[in-house]
Length: 216
Image (cartoon, rainbow, N blue to C red):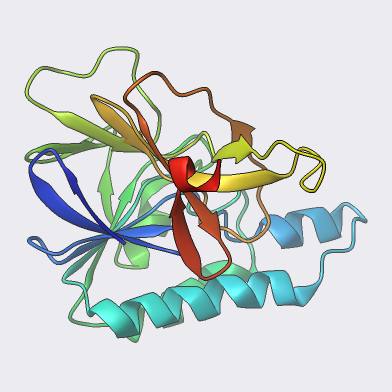
């Protein structure tokens, strides 16, 4: 689905990502690689299919768009060094013509050199590509002349009605001055958002994007 934001054309993809065609840039928030391994070590069994889905979708996106830049909007890894670190290194080397950026998030806690050894370009706390200001966290006040794009919240809406029984659905949120992307990772929680009048909400439902108004 194509939308206009801050005068720019953006494509929302059901894989919870955004493609900015003018800059050939793919935006992805909250991948949380290694989160399944983290829970497995704690004795909570998570199917390998959860992890495989992340890699399959990531590959499909890069194969579809051939982006010049990929922007990870924080929480690329779930805190600790894990086996998926090496998998990511091999994955990134598969796309030598693409630059991979990481806007540091609260779970990206390892020393910078670990990320840089993978070839990641680090940015903290922001990356400025006019008209967009990219960060991991939302801001109470967005600097003048910028439109903020972030993650962290894992935004979702709750569907009402007997058939849905309060089902939570991940969504893209676009407010007057900032956007919040859904979490890309297949094994992440969600946070219910409460939009203001005029905000735009796009729900992620399997293989399609649905404007919230159309689902009411």
